[in-house]
Length: 285
Image (cartoon, rainbow, N blue to C red; front, side):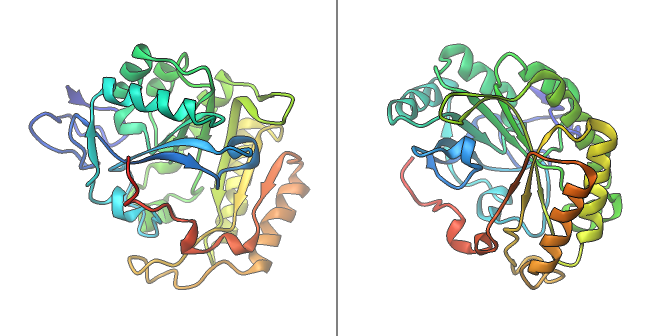
C-alpha cells in the first residue's frame, strides 16, 4: 500500500521502502503481555493486554520506549498470527486489548480484528499525532481511546518531537475520539468505552502544560477525563531535560486543572518517574 496513515503523509510503498516511522508493511511487534501500569480503570487487577508495536510516527527525544520506537527490531506478525495472540491474551483474563503506538499499523489492526474480535474492550493507545479520517475508520473497532496531548506549543512540539504541526492534528483527532466514545464503566469500575486524555508534564515546561489544559477546555470542555502524568524520566537522548519533574511543578498543573473546572483527573505518584516502569522488551512474545 501507499502509506498516508499519519500526518507525515510519507506517500511511500512500505513493501519496498520505509517512511518516517521506519516500519515495513508487516507488523513489527516487540511485546505482547499483560501490563499493570496504565490508569486504574484500564489496568484493573488483571492487567491490560498490551501489544507494543515497533516504530513511531513521532521523534520524541525523551521517549522511554526509544529502543523500539526509533529502530523497529521486534518480530513480524501477520494479522492471522496476531489474532491468535489476542485470543491467548484474552484467555489470560486481561481486562482489555491495548494497542500501543498503533497509528502506522491501524490498517493491519482492522484486518486483525476482522478475523477475531475479542469479547473485551479494544484500546487505541496513541501519541495523538493522528489524522481524523483514520480515527473515523477505527470507530467500529475501538472502544477506548488513550491519546496523548503532549504540547500546546508548536515550538515545543518541534523542539522535542520534531513535529511543528503536532498540536493542530492532535486536538482535531482527539475531538473526533471524544465525539465517538462516551465514558462507561462496569460494576468493578473498569472502563468499557470512552476517552482518557493523557498529558505528561515536562520539567521546566509547566506553562505549556497549563496551556494544554486551556486548549482542552476551549475545544472539548471540562467534562472530559484527564490523566496528568508525572512520570518523565531523563534520557541520554534528551540532554535539555536532565532531571525529573519537581513536585511543585506537578502540583501547580493539578491545581490549575481543578481551578479550570476539570473534575475527572487521574494523578500519578511522583515515584512513577523510574526506569523500572519501562517494559522489558526481551520478554517472549
